[in-house]
Image 1: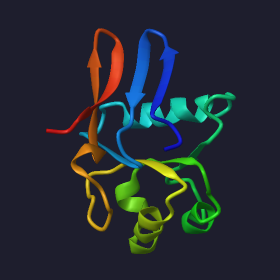
Image 2 (image 1 turned 90 degrees about the vertical axis):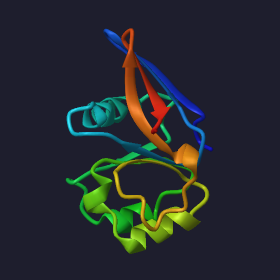
Image 3 (image 1 turned 180 degrees about the vertical axis):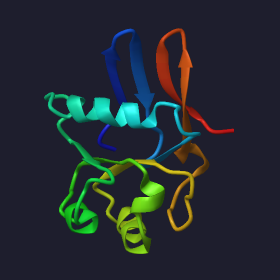
Length: 133
């Protein structure tokens, strides 16, 4: 795993994101903060502690070509439901040097465990990833 935990403050919130698997699927309804978190990770990747973060979203051109260049990275894909195809799913399944956080609802074709499914939770200004029930 690249990161067991990503922890940072973005006033008034503390983000404390713990990861149990190499592939983490972050689900949840629209408006629950996934894209906001993506934006914060874009800033966080500039720090020494989190420079292994690599981000992809709908603005990314040539997603597969860029993804296959990633090794030993914490790969985050926003709107993964519409961005990843079978070829990308296969790469994610078999490129073991990377860790993935995918914002998506459909896990078909991905090798994931029960601990892979997370939703963002907020309690007392602390944002965490909790197992989806």
